[in-house]
Image (cartoon, rainbow, N blue to C red; front, top):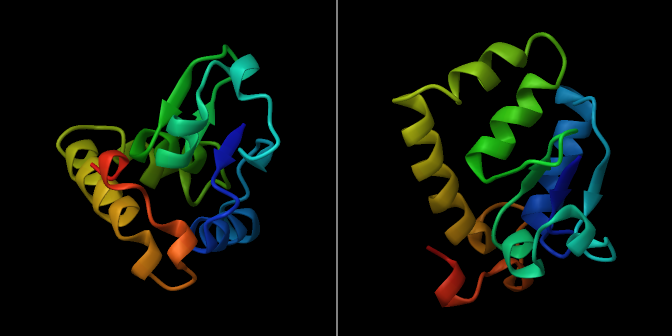
Length: 122
């Protein structure tokens, strides 16, 4: 399952792209209105980063979640998902994800509602 911030325009735009192009074999849903406790995550974490909930219940966040979604997608996207999970590319993916997450309200599709509170933006 891919869980994202449904109140964030940038996140919603990215998810629509993934649904059309990547088509991961997963349920995709905004965290708002979900039973996050049953998934073992908090609303703070779900607002902070995209989440990938594996079938075994393990939760991956941020760049690791994006890599997992790519690996679960159409065959053309799977190699990118594998590469993003292997150091040193995984380190770069993590840094890029954090940067995008911090400034998502300034990106196309983003709004002021997308801005993370300062303590969670790191």
